Image (cartoon, rainbow, N blue to C red; front, side, top):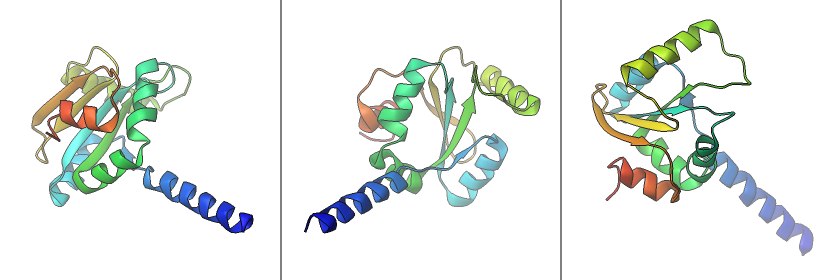
Length: 144
């Protein structure tokens, strides 16, 4: 009986991990094309993935959850604009990220920018104070 329960538990854990895996683009133009074709909104995550404590907390408490993954897969095209300190990035990606940071006037991390499928800004969230997926989606105007 115990081996069956362990197998079931392992399967459920694997399914929940799989549900939280999301595709994050690094090219906003490609993401916009996908969003327009799918009639979805675009969520841009400006992050310092390997040094920003609140960015890491946002990743763990929001983006890694099955609840967010389910919502995102139905409604969003995701873009990550990363400014790591330890991880190397190609010069071209660094330049593109800096250009987007300037374009959207991002001065703090994390910053989330919500665009409609045509690229018009419809929401913004600077910082992360906790609360999980519901709090973030409400702050962005995606849930009431």
